[in-house]
Length: 399
Image (cartoon, rainbow, N blue to C red; front, side, top):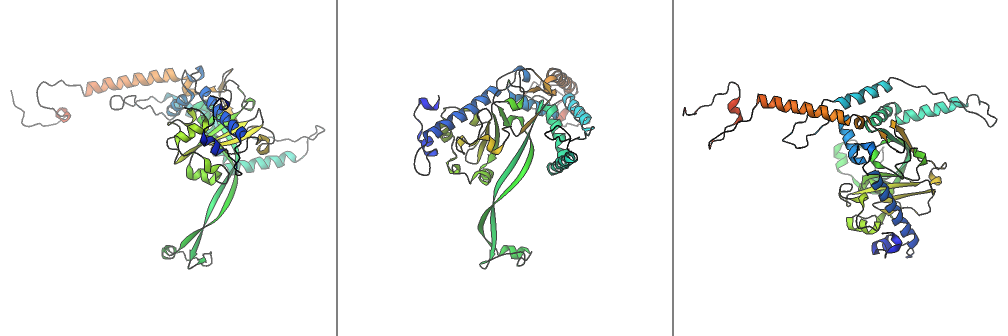
């Protein structure tokens, strides 16, 4: 139900009450509508579609992941065998190895307003790109990009700026702070130290990450180009401890829910897919972070367990001046009218599954020939060792 059609819960009022004691109803309703929109986007992604062979995206992702590493678990453990020919795995290895053979060289050219080449400027940019590659260990990362591409059909790469607040601990001995000059590098010396809290030190660094596709929630799964999406949400599950290092300085952090019922009240829905038990097992020890990029309305925000952390009017262009998503999507076999591409496991699913099934049947038939089932009439239990080659069983009566 939309937030303006029913009375807001007391938890919502408490969460979005400012430090001066005034409840911001507009802010609260905006936050509820946004988290409900993210939930709808997730449910739209999880619909059964032809791209994923009639499966939900998350289930298809897991299927592709298992096939890519040649993991084919039995449907009934103890009754079936884990047998796989490895066709999908070998195909992915082959494609990835083929593309990794080629190292492409950049040719960077810069042009002035008059359309003429600026001599030397391209070399400067080229050096900057090369330095960035070294910092990000790009040569190793490109292998992960190809693996994800052929395994899942699409690779999402995040280019972002990571900020962490790291608490410092100060070592003390007899009321004096330990410095490198007064430090004695022995266990006995460490055993006699006490510690006190120091200042928070903020660390910042540029990061480039290959994302799990399940953490990317697109605003419209039918729009092919990533930068044409009306909105994108990046989801991340973190522990409370890690979340505190990054977000504790935000004013609403102390209002982040640690109970499932509380989260339900904050989101304004009786049941919300974003926070079901399969996605968030224990709100007391972990939280789900949603970074919401609304390119269409030039808005950016962060949600922790459903609570909006920044003011509703925070603009996306403050962080990203060009109003572009800090995300790159590398696609394989694209389909018209779909943001997602066909993966190798999806395209070979039926053939690979049939081959694996046939191999499993052959294995079971071979097993039945080698170790056939035996029906025993009587009250005694016959051990399987009885039928082993060279086995001697004593005490068997001739009758």
